[in-house]
Length: 314
Image 1 (tube, helix red, strand yellow):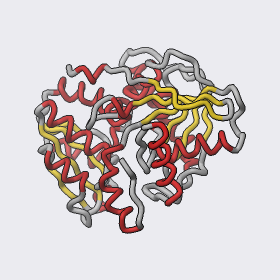
Image 2: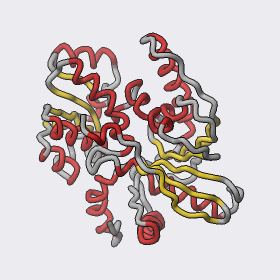
Image 3: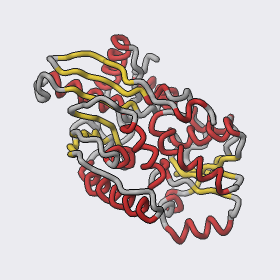
Image 4: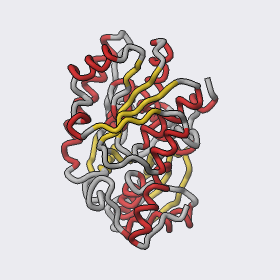
């Protein structure tokens, strides 16, 4: 196993602001290309893939997907074939897809209607029969194995924090973290509009995870935490950014040398510091933010931002 597979990512003190201590767990430093919650959610899928003796790891994602890029990089690193079914046929090339191809990944664009079947058991069964040499990884690495990897995040945290913050889109990372038994107030910053659906989704993830662990005789999960959703920091929705966010990210990098991505972690850190500045988080609170990686997408985002006279400066 490569050393990065067992790494405990460092926890860095960012600053003390209005009496609030802010720390960040730098999962972006796990590996240059397979990092953040992308590695966390792939870790146990990779173990299962090796044990399956299958030849190809196939997964699903959008044209700018961090998960797709991490899967491609993992395949190149360990010398196995990878394939991705990409949502939508309108984008055939961009920095993310170019990187994936450079890693040897086979890219196949499918219609959005076809893509909508990605979680349909009947469709997945047909795919498995047609491609018996393929190991299927769900979109984004979600599911029980992905959650198991995210549970490891909190197992690495030995100090006590009053608040643990993470950005999210599906709730897999948060569900895994909450299943660790770590007692705190977890704060989820949805990267998309209308994030209230994530609360029941996370609860279902946790129940499914617990049932699967019990079925496999791997013990029970413990959830002793509370969950708060922060729905006011999506900046227009998933994949949407505003000049205020880009200026914030550049300023934060200049001050602390911490690079953030504009889809997830940038919005989360903006929200945390905004709430501190407004006095909504009391002095003496100790906050841990989770850096979930995603930095590979900055090059592609900058191509879009430059048309608006904006740029992420790292």
